[in-house]
Length: 499
Image (cartoon, rainbow, N blue to C red):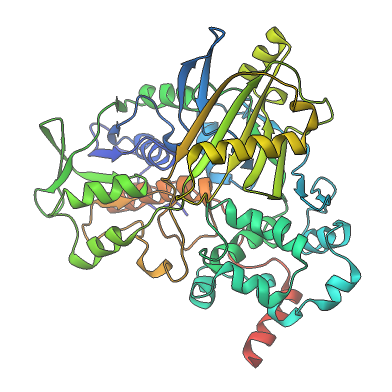
């Protein structure tokens, strides 16, 4: 909700530093600058976008291309992220819809969301009715009592009830059929780059609420029609510069020091600058390092919570430039389960302009493979070879293809949301009144996750500072905090009271 007060600062506003140029930092910088705050944005890498940034690289055939972490689904429920992108692209012309979110299990069954009803609760019921992974015997064997919490998700109460339970334990109690377990729910848990045995069941239930019972947009999504920098971050960076934001790329922050009750000093490259406020919008590793090197920040309990944050297991993105096309009926994106670690396949030339131009010029195709929650003890080359072998089995026409070039992104910098971890996750506010936090690792009482949590907490951090300064904040949108079906909520609540 927006805060009451004047619309913006007239004349020089307070000075704020935003540390981190990913989605959360960009949202915070945008929200502050639009109200007249003098913002400096620090980003250690060579460009904006954080974990959705891109880098230029030259292929063996001499073509200049952009390598990134590849496929990310921009779901229609990402209201605040899409609102951020609209600042530079009012019609979201850089996003194009993919027609379906197909999920394939190794047993040959494939689920589709293209024809699932959008209106809750018919969305969840329609998925079960249309899905080949749910048979009548499977439905009869499920435990309805254990499943009822899915229909009465409330935020933040869901964390109080289910953060102490793993996603795997919850799914076993419900007794979903194995294929449905993998397709409909493990896909959600692995979107957090986490194994279901480690992931908090609260996050799983929240995702079910966001996509099935809390919104009418379903699981359809858009993707950028060009690499992330060109489609999203360069236009947004130009918008911020027009607002007067000073963007400092390749400028990591070394430490933040407390000057007085409200003033903070940001040190970078041996230079210190005082600010009226600071927003930390960093990934887990960057946040832990900065807080460890800034001993004046926070109090012991807050610092201990920051130090306790963990990153999810490693993940791999393999992008392959092939000398021949993938079969024309292949989907632009396919989620997979049971394929020895392969979590999804993207045919980039079906929707990304840069890849499509290369494919048209060469007669080839650009294919991307993702593996989440990889065993850190497994040799990287072995995982890369395994994904390629699984691609050949899944899309047999690729077996004869020559790999013109390949790029592999190995990362381990996404936050982990483990069982029992919610209480120690940092919130937007910190012990220092003008130091705020933002990012997908930050706790929020709103029903948001992943990229939308990053954008939303960025706006929330800015709104908290604007409220302090007596300036109106920004309106935010989310799916409802509780399920939209009173009947299902009532049944679930009755069952919970009896237990």
